[in-house]
Image 1 (tube, rainbow, N blue to C red):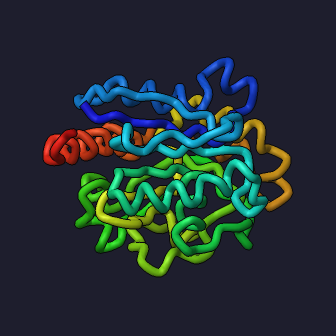
Image 2 (cartoon, rainbow, N blue to C red; image 1 turned 90 degrees about the horizontal axis):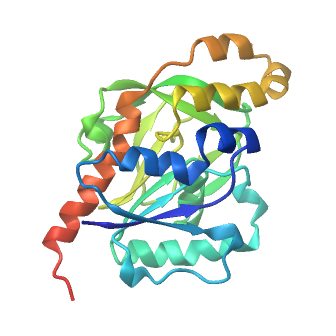
Image 3 (cartoon, rainbow, N blue to C red; image 1 turned 180 degrees about the horizontal axis):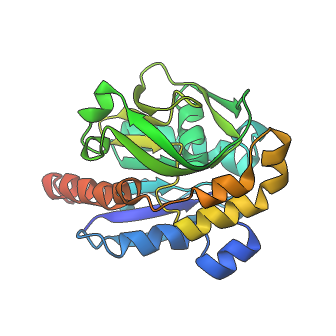
Length: 247
């Protein structure tokens, strides 16, 4: 079975963590149902004093956060060269939201506040031609719905990155950074209840940018296709481990 490490990059709202689970719990809850039944550990990056040994890892899942990549906090900056090394070793990676932005920044792109403001709610995303052929995202419909909650974004994709999905708000909804290294701006781990809770916290910010939070809350739906990416990622990590000679 693949040895997966959830890189926890922050905490959710206290009430969300209490009622629905923190970021790592949401990931684990989906992965428990994966046919790969992976071994999953959690690394709490903001509170850690050292980085895990990559020799013991087959796949990395990098979570969202309420931190901002552009603020360059020391723990976040320390992850950059570690992620570069992980990519050089061809360790499978899936970055989500903050993880998406951090991977892009680590690999030569730029991440900062989106000039059009926040994107929140259940939104439609479209695969690019490359996305339709991708081993991870290619399992999705050409157009699918996903949960989103972000103020920062990937403004410039790394030169070697391949854009796999986009929408009107964000041309970099999903990127591939190498053979087995992906990142997505949306939250495959969010449930509808979690998405509604996030929108409730963001009411004032959304109104300030001219959006109707109550309509966004009413429009929240299940996103089984997007959620399925986590199990698909675990399967791809498992297959890679099966074909890699073990020490």
